Image (cartoon, rainbow, N blue to C red):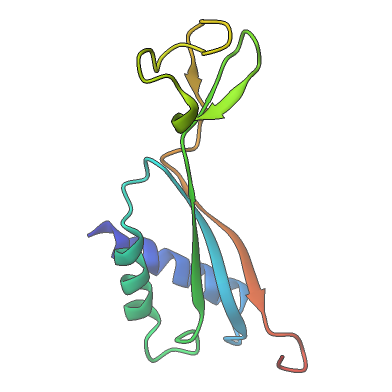
Length: 119
């Protein structure tokens, strides 16, 4: 259950960037191959932040889908647009496709904070 350790790292980032507990939400991006269960991560985040100033912080998760690129014709597209008969080759020029990097990564993209008036 590595989602718990990921939730703990997200919590540490919140503590570093909003030490007064004035965060509303935090947004993360998960790569398509990150092997992180979104619901498990949500539940782990709730457990980690329970009974802390961050207990009401919303965790927004954006999943990054597979994106393939053809180095020859510079076309990029998602997996759903690939031909099922030949998923390794570009449907436009026939050259071998390459998978863009970052699909197994996770990153914190933003933190929404309360303004100074508390709204």
